[in-house]
Length: 442
Image (cartoon, rainbow, N blue to C red; front, top):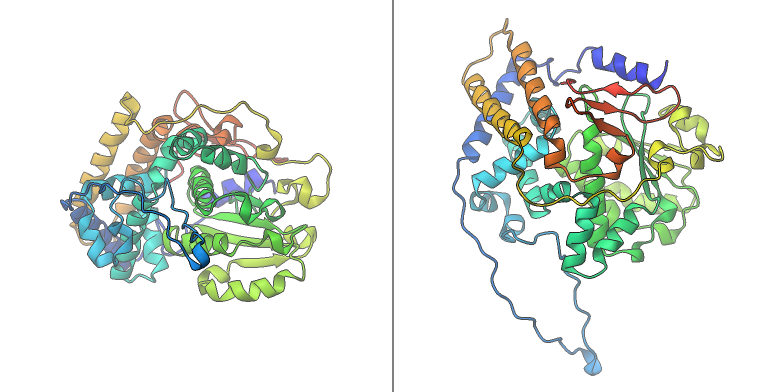
């Protein structure tokens, strides 16, 4: 069966328990309660905050008159928001954040996805404990605000370059250099129809970039790759190509950041993690990484020693040549050479498509609040109504995609194409793949 066929069949197969269109009465009511709590949160006033003027402190002298090393501060992450939002415990920090900010970043987190599906990921991740799911979701919202995820999306890769260069000379150039270094390519699909991020570990050297850049790069790729999400394909596959790995390529800080992202801020979005051709020296490192892993995340990690084992998870035609050994074989992301895309901006869009999208958010909230007030009946036909509402939301968001999301090389290469009619096509470019219209997959 071709990748396109497997994806299409996946889209028509029965949804898994606890997912959209396959909820028990109790699970459906819990989803309603989560929505109700979110709507109440979005009403809160929060606390006004303005950055204090600070003077540069004189360098301290250490032993023998030497200057003590100065800690490198982030110049993009955390700028423009109250540092207490992330520093304080959640129960103290959350009331400080304006509800309008929480609402805005919530809908930017939803992006083109089914809103119910996103909320359900938090409920499943916390085993249907409503309080725990609510805390996890709201903790994610404050993290997204502090890490400026929405700004990263709006700026796009070359908007990020310009903004980072403005904040610190050459920092933005470093971001783009690392993005184009060959460390990470998008491709796919795997055998479950998921998009794949291929990470070539041998190209990563920790000292090549500040820690902030690798965080920004990780968040940019994660947020950009979410565009390929289409029900029921909710998760992604990561392939760590460990060929030519040495200890100089190891970066514990990056590993910890990535693990935290998947466990705390992107629940249920990691479908599988494949560690391919790990050398013997990696076994010692793995023993240090294992205690960091949540059991659910750990269960999705598989080691493969050769292409035959890797093809248990990924079709051969979706694998790049640096893994299969086929000279010249590349993913679409690797193979396409394009001119630099235009930078995005942080200016609020004023287009008709963006206004229609904002109106659709209001309609979705209004209809959802009304729906959340009712108790679910055993013979309820709510599913079809909710899916239609989600379809209308998704279509409106896709039509506003170019207003909300800064230009990316992935769009320029045709991995994702939004045509003039506002329909979105997914094209991995691998053999036997047929471009797939995913516009209304909710």
